[in-house]
Length: 563
Image (cartoon, rainbow, N blue to C red; front, side, top):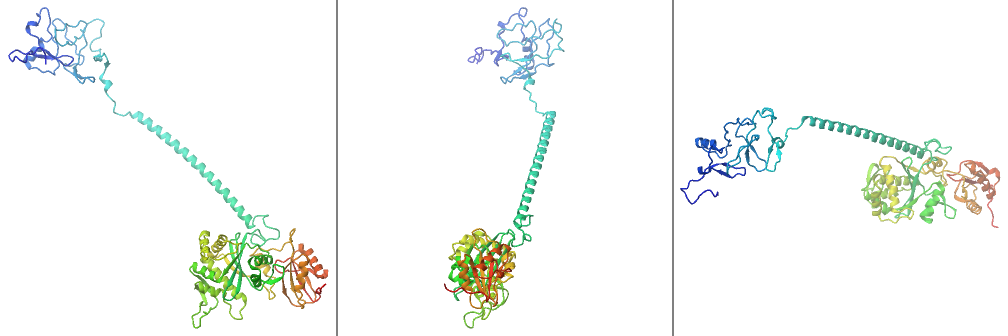
């Protein structure tokens, strides 16, 4: 409330508001008694007061100062009067002020400061009004600004966007080119690595198979020859028929070089050397010498390395067949049941399904008067059927062997046996498996064909000159007609030779000492001297199997008498 008002006197004439000062306070009209005479003082609001009386008062309208007589008209740089510009500092609107004149008009007492007068157009030293631009706005703290400073550019610059897009395009294209070069280098490196590995693998395979020039030994015919550098894993399995007290022996051979599996059936009648060097049959050696002595005797006879022995009793064979859910084989005969009037356990025919009990009956069956080879063939068929159903995974195979809970030989623990059977099962599943019978004569000695078909090709046995410290192996065939084999065995053992085995032969007049390799000629001569035979009895021939020297006794052999 202004002190000039009289709120308690309603009849007192209230001063009239004629405008507002620069601080937003109202400016009141002064009483007539306080105005100066027109001759001495100029009232800039006189014309305005008359306009207000004529048209009414608008407090927000822009007030125009009165024109002083005798002066040129004021210049409005913006070509219009009463235009208000917004204030960004106080939020209030202020009237656009014209350019101040060189001689400002005196301000009335207690009135708002009047707007400065525009400079005359013809003042010397100044440019015409049409050439002069609007002066900058000035606030209370004398800061100059223009409206253009507060206008923000919202439209994007198309040229700058084009430049940015071009830079992005060139950068992405360079990156793509670099990525393509990097991928190309990686492909080249990978291709080179693959080629190197392929070449190395091919050379390694040729070398291991004996096909690489210079890798085979002299006299060998390619990598398939038994004398080639082939790797084999051989285990011996003895099937014990607890019901009849008989045994059946076979060799399970895994040729890791040719990826071929073979079951070699060994007749019980084959002659081997016992622990003392005496000749005995295989069946008797299994009973007397046990697993380790028989394994060594078989290795000496065939010249093959046997890694372990698997004793398989008939109850364990039955459990093994049941663990693989039965087998399917081709049978060559009917196997009757032990119970009278019962159906046969096994029917003759192709693809016969056998459970554990039937498989054991078929593997051990031997008809009256039937050759031993027939029963061995049935045992081999059962083993082949088991391997076809056996797991080729070593871990699963180990679990199967562990479930049998059989007592194994220390030379072949469960893990090693399972691994060997798993590899053989892999061959049997794809058909790379066969069964062979070791040829043996009536006297129990190996036939001439056994050396090539089984010993060399399958087992990899080879007759070589004895190495340093190795004792030559000698076998004896008795054709003297006077049972002189035992006497000859004692003489040979005392002479420092290893007696492999003895057998009977057809009666003959003259004795012979046979060697197969020229390197064994000196050994044959020593054997003849030890037995008291003439040097003319020594000759090159076919020794039994892989034996270094074979002696065939005749009637001329004199049995040494007691000393």
